[in-house]
Length: 409
Ligand code: AAL
Image (cartoon, rainbow, N blue to C red):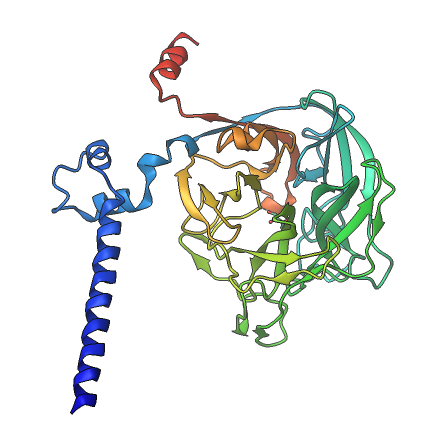
């Protein structure tokens, strides 16, 4: 009997503690919002809230004012603007060395034919048979092309067909280019890899690593023999076919290699392509890079645009998925939340690394480079040319002073 009574008291204590815990959680959830929040959002009666009002409170948009703004496009001068028959695309971040701005990008010359020509030597995409070139500028407007930085690897190597979509990281006096690689032949079912080249000077010479630093997970299963990347038995992980747009950041004493993944048998979702991002983390800059167990870390976006802000990581999600055209922030580099929505996102943004990122949430976006496309009537999109341009981001004019200034502009 004594036994039964003591068990009863233990259970009673457990349930009353648990109830206290629960009501504490409920209270703290309630306490997150103040009368000022309700007033700002014009919520007259917090006991009777519509879904939209609850979402507005939960998503905090009224507190994220400083993350909103507008992108604009600007033409640049010099060698890397529009040139017929020349592809210049996917610029890296813009770094500054000895007073000169540097950027690297994919460059190729010659007609694109698409897949299925029967000739494996023919260029299939604008970024096929592409090398990594670089340009410099004194003012960020007038750019001078300097030449090739990284070319294809030797025949039979992982990078013997195309090296493209580079990103740059300067770390402890050395320069690291990370980029996509394709091995011959380039077919619809090609799996791509991420390569790395290292230099002591931004003008090179660049030394490539013998092996890629990241590979597609290849854990889906193709259906049939036809070269279709949509015919699959199983799709596999979010990055089963492609690891794209590598972007390397030094963060919390480790190297964070962010990338875009594409699955075998890609589907459409939310009116766009099935695109997700992942991250692979290493202690040593040359790897091994270990894919995070939390991947995928986004369910939207296209070319990566990612930067350090305060203790966390911020990013712009561009073209695809339900969260396209948003700016997001994560306190730990893994768990991103939407902070704002934007009207239009430039393609393949290369941010400027010398800006004072912590000054303002969108300071890192003040200006940078991106690419534009020129398509020709009657030709498919992939037969068009791409060229570099400059973007800027201006904050919404919503303080009284800014509004007054905007009227006098
Ligand atoms: C871009 C990027 C990658 C793709 C191709 C060239 O938008 O996502 O770089 O491979 O298109």
